[in-house]
Image (cartoon, rainbow, N blue to C red; front, side):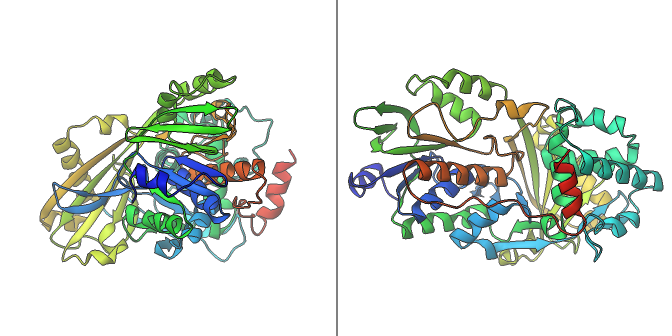
Amino acid sequence: MQTLRELVASNPASGPTVTVIGGGVAGMSAACALAEVDFRVQLIERRGYLGGRASSYLHPGVNEVIDNCQHVLFGCCTNLLGFYRRIGAADRIHWTSEMTMIEPGGRRSTLGPSPLPAPLHGLPKLLSAHAFTIADKAALARAFKAMIKLGTADDPGEKLSNWLRRHKQTTGAIERFWRLVIASALNADLDTIAVPYAAKVIRELFMNSAEAGAMGMSSVPLSELYASAAEFLTQHNAKVLLNGKVESLSWDGPAGKWTIETRTGALTSDYVVVALPFEAMGKLLVHMPAAKGAETLANQIAQHQHWPICSVHLWFDREITELKHAVLLDREIHWMYNKGLLQPWRKLNGSYIELVQSASRRFAALPREQAIAQALAELAEFFPATKDARLEKAVLVKEVTATFGVPPRIDEARPSVKSPWPNLYLAGDWINTGWPSTMESAARSGHLSAEALGAYAGKSLQCFEPDLKPHGLMRFLSQSSARR
């Protein structure tokens, strides 16, 4: 990658230049889309690698490459998949249509699609799942039906916990589905989740189609996955500046240029896309010119809060399960990913397991040794072979700024991609995309900002990918719901 001096020298001031600030999924997706239609793109990232919160690194304590947290995507993530196709990384995703739920003691239930038309395709395996009682299954069926009918008349300020009580959800349904699957997917407590976001997850993952609900996981480390973006940008004459923390921006109205000051120097640009997490955008705001609407943006940012995700990485001297991933019931840890099987390039003699714990500030506050010991003890309840295996090394990763919360009315605090400043656009998962804090939301924001910038600059750019259309009976049920 280039130094700032080399970057400026290789970008003579001829033709529209776009500087993208932030090399996470939002920034990469915007930069790649703009570079594809011949904007002179320069991407600046404060770290020494791309990926943002979706990245990997060589952990010095264990000499292993690990992801900062396990990231998953689904078939409904149309813009993330479009971005992967653009940079040539789509073939590095491992896909599965089934979700194995395990109870302490080892009893398993499998959720997944059947040949029945949507939204009935998941019903046979739900009805046969040992993890739920007959009362649980009836409660879930009632809730799913209500989610289809959820319309504008429903209170946008209602918490999911209250909605579940109103719809008579059983303890088993709440603890083993809503709290584990839905609250875990949204990485927040049930009483801090807005009902529309829960409905979004239900419809996309379980009701619209089997294709939409398929789950994907990277078969390579995340930084290797996103190295394809750097290669794509280089091939399209774009420039990538790593270790380039942006300190301030200034606007020259008569010249129609932005000046971006970094720790190592300055560069100018016709357009800017600021693709930063909300807290980083808040810090940058005080180093930007005054503008009508800047105070409103600052107030919106102040309403966002982070939720942590913790992951425990464990290396054993032998294989403890044949499963590639599983949902773990009734315990603190929620998800198991068998990274040795998901990433066969590692060629392990034993096994490498990653355990993920979502939406728990309590677990995130535990000391390293206590958190690892608890995770090990719980893992053995699901996979008895753990007791006979020798733990060779372990790592605890706490991503305290993993996601933003989605409480009632949070959309009022999510701005559009158009900013208060001229020739400057916003991107990031916290932008108002209609999606929760996910890589899909980040990719959507990047594509939306690229399209808005392209339209303003007079260039035809169509990179935004619409939602997958519902299949089967959902084609008619979703239309009926939309008319409410």
